[in-house]
Length: 104
Image (cartoon, rainbow, N blue to C red):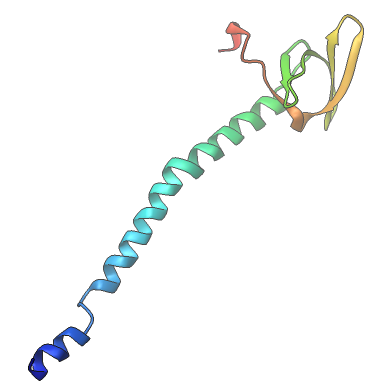
């Protein structure tokens, strides 16, 4: 082997650093587009639902308790789960009742 081929093998490929950065940026953009963006949209929709609650709305808690909204306060909601059986839960624990076809 001559000295020239050894020097060529020791030098890094030209432009290799830029392609790595472009690939990392592309991976981040794809991850944001498919994971972070839909999650933010879902959180915003849920927050809008919680702010627009009114008496008589059917809801489900994150624990799986179905009920009808009886009273709304700033941070809590009183839910009627059966005849004269009411529980108070945090607004953050409520999700939409997707079984009601009128709301879909």
